[in-house]
Length: 126
Image 1 (tube, rainbow, N blue to C red):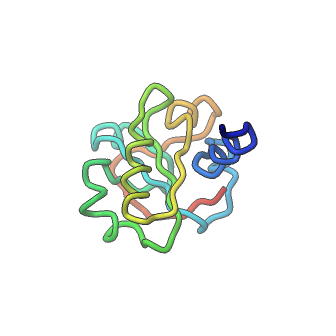
Image 2 (cartoon, rainbow, N blue to C red):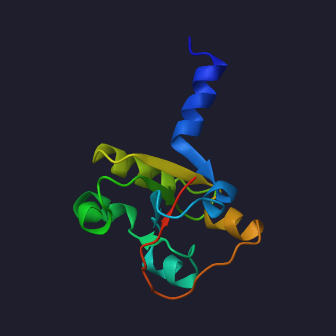
């Protein structure tokens, strides 16, 4: 039987939250928005890269350096898109974490969203 220490340590190794992402030092990971183009255009986290989950297996290496850790996000806690995206990256051998709360909690924390289709790659760290 797993202990609480093992369970919580595993969660912290595979998840992060919006406050940690926002406060992170630049360059230690790439933030990946796994939602649809329409959702991305309505608003996304500044500096994120748009890569829908269905495209990760075929496009990840051209969009994200395999040597750089990844943090995935989607809409919010009612959506498991970030979990699916994190699994897809993990299957490709990337170091990956899921940002719990997604765009919904990013906005609840009062952080700004970028609009439109810019796909600037800027690393964030936590």
